[in-house]
Image 1 (spheres, helix red, strand yellow):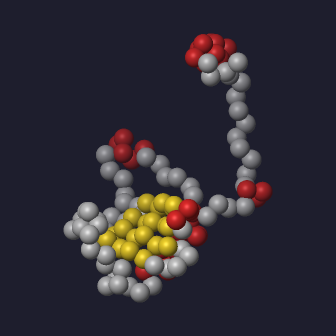
Image 2 (cartoon, rainbow, N blue to C red):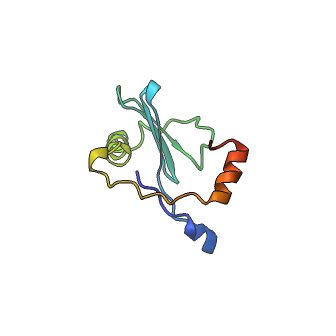
Length: 115
């Protein structure tokens, strides 16, 4: 997934809201947090939880059954599209590295970061 620039925070102190994603693979869970709703979906069983983050910050009332029936499926589909690793063979090569300045190298060596 591509990151996004935080530069607007330095100019006007704001950044547009975005969906935050998390995955706990060992438990088969995918989580999506929008400014309004937090979804937690088991991608093996399809079991879902959804919470109103403003009205229920302690996640006591599961709203998944009351929200759109395809909400959890959309979470899984969006996660697969946005967060699944892409084919690295077709990725552009990393940028070339610049030689390390000798003074910086000495400082890093003194700190034990390089030999």
